Image (cartoon, rainbow, N blue to C red; front, side, top):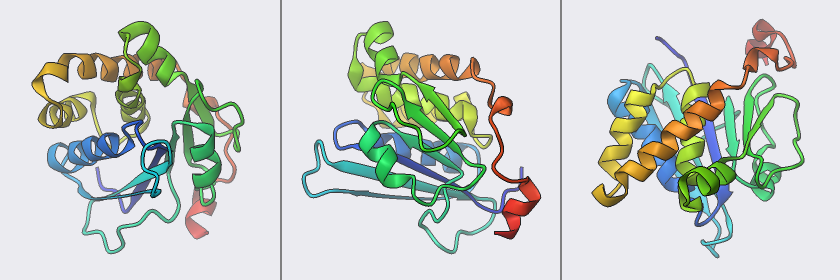
Length: 196
């Protein structure tokens, strides 16, 4: 698959594992799916509990600018992150939110799944909500497969926690499979979006 540029922004609070999520995703896309990739991150001075975002730019060719300018996909793990990082969302992009913490959606092109609730209720550990979210993102992003994500995850997570994280990834993928994104409204026609 050739792709000119695909941009993803992951956002939440410090301590939610946003950076790890983005690194695993970037390695899955770059090391295992074979794309060019650039991953960047930023977080407030308060770190844990403060706003945090990480961005991944993917392309089939060398990337000339490493920052996200108009996200094709935005993952927001809480309301503050959704409010703060939605500003330059691509008109026909996809907003994916953790409905455990996000109640107000700024667009109708959104998928709300309870990532933290799934992590808590099905896996007994809220700390793997980031991997539940990553499984869902893997389903909605056409550039990566579960196999690629699992390979990158295994390389990044300590052996003692691999099984739990793999189960979280699979739970997120399963939850996302129940969503029909073709029913989401389009803001503009795809050919018009390219002209913006």
